[in-house]
Amino acid sequence: MEPTDVNRRMFDEVHRRRGDGRTSLPPIVKQTLGDLTKKSVLHLHCGSGEGSAELAEQGAVVTAIDLDEALLDAARERWPSILWIAADPQALPANLRRARFDLVYSPEGVLGRLSDVDTWAAGLGAAVRRRGELLVFDDHPVSLCVDGLLRWHADYFDDGIVRLGRLVSALVRAGFRVEALEEYPLDATGRRHDRGIPGSFLLYAVRV
Image (cartoon, rainbow, N blue to C red; front, side, top):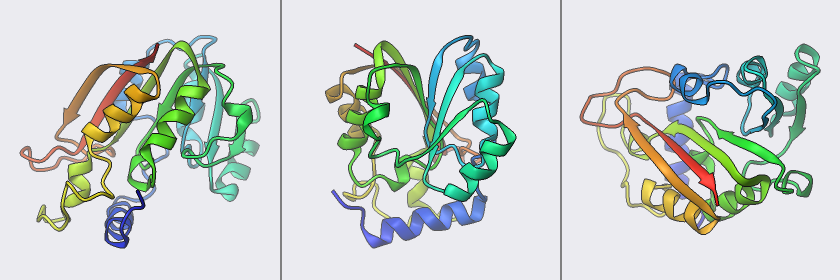
């Protein structure tokens, strides 16, 4: 299903208010990942690369993807040991769909731009090896439905919103077993929302 123009605009507005938001790993992600020594990790939507570099510092062999060629060029100069690939998280190229990754990390900014969550999930299912792991840490879809003053301006049940139920169902169909799903009052950049409105979520799944 294609996102509506309204949903595209509200996603872009949220991220204009926050800035890029993709420079480093959030503390909850670092804590969850732990030691990545010799693990092959696919980092989606890597942005300027600092988060990918942190994954490598934790011992991972990192492949990082983003659609922004300028950001990737700068990242290649700073961290030549990481493989940087221009690719869309929703349409992974064939060379990344070979069931060779131990872990896929999907950070803030991926889900809000998906037009087809099933295609995205199927690509990840093809990329990660059996018993491989998936960690998603992203804006809670509810947070994309409120403005900076926490006033509702969009319908959570609009077809363009990747609701948590849709996300979990898509991953299950793609061969994942969801083992944990946590919601937080902080958004993905660490700022606090009204505690009655979830700001971010973390999902952990294993490829079966």
